[in-house]
Amino acid sequence: MLGTSGRNYANRIWEIPTSGPLVTWVLMQSPYTPDEIDIIDVDSHYSPHPTFWQDHAPTAFKNRVPRICEDEAGLPEWRVDDKPFDSIGFNMIRPDGSKAQGNMRALPQFDDMHAGSYDVRARVDWLNEHGIHQQIMYPNIGGFSSQMFYTKIADPELRNVCIRTYNDAASALQAESGGRLVPLSQLPWWDIDAAEKELERTVSELGLLAGPTMFCAPEMHGMPSFNQPEWSRFLSRCEEYEVPLSFHIGVPGGGAQKPWLESNLDVTTQLTKGRGMHLAIYTCNSFLSNSWLIANLIFSGIFMRHPRLKVVSGESGISWLPFFLEAMDFQWHENVESQDKREMWNDMPPSDVYRQNMFGSFWFEKTALAENIDFLGADTVMFETDFPHGTSLTDRMTKDVAATLSTLSPDVRRKVLHDTAARVYNLK
Image (tube, rainbow, N blue to C red; front, side, top):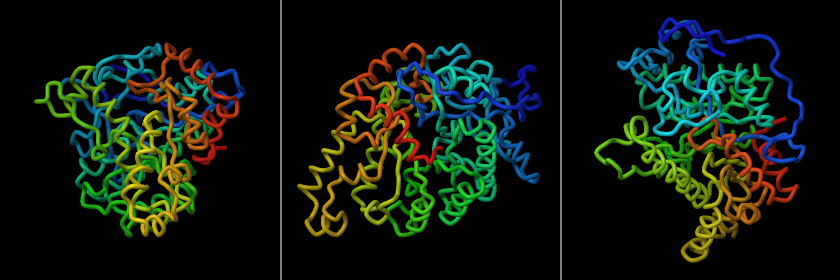
């Protein structure tokens, strides 16, 4: 647990354990299934503790990397070069495990939220309590795909230092957890050469083998889109290192739409200071936002040029995917020229391309889960909890999730709860 000494975040002493063994994993019965399966959760989020960057930053940048300060209302916020950068993260689970309702900042203080949001030992305890073996972790500040490092930090060198420092700290966190917590790396996607070098460093030196979380629309910021030749070598490196690219939902440019309610407010204000219905509208639409990415990746022929590339659609659910794959197949048959079908896809319909290269995950879905997994293929489907977000699984939902999982065959349960994720994310 983090220490407590008042609300002065700038001078507060944070007692982060740095030694001593964590609880050793022993296969236990999960509340989600009676099967003896080491469950892998492929979508959760980590909110850095207040000295996360400073503990690992180069000496010359320790006072410039993200650090916790107080805003005008006395609430903690991250600042970079003494300029506002981000809140302390989208955390909705209280210390007792119950879920807060409302906007993204319903729990504005570290002490208001479950310690597993930011503390390694508390997070591993949470895994043990819920019978989960390993957990993939996306970042919870700076954007789920690093976009705020580009939009809010003007100094290119500082941007890249922040990204490298995050990865150094993430590697240390993974080691401290004994490999139970598996952070995704972050890359400076705004500089393709630097992104390639950092990809190599995170895999070869830092052991972050689950790969990076990526921004889905670099073209929004004057960069080439992923189908352009400038990205070819980077994508080939991902094939070579066998790491997936994970694209989380809700990223600007991904297609998520602004709620109508109180439309005079900008999206950020609606989500961080508005009502729960604002967040609900945005989230429901965000689940579908990766449809743009999936269609572009498949119809551009990227997977034909990079047949071993693995791409994960993070936190998007799976129930809408059967319709979307059918829609792509229909458009492919009806509108794509025969020559393109032969030359770009080797006559493979989009649904088969998806099954070869792409992966999704589910958590709260009930309707026709077995049928949807059968259509998509169990080798493309994984399980998540989304801890500690507003749509995350809580103890209140455990019986429902267990009942839904019971509709799957034992072989399919093993694939979606463990085998597919272990293969995709290189977990041992």
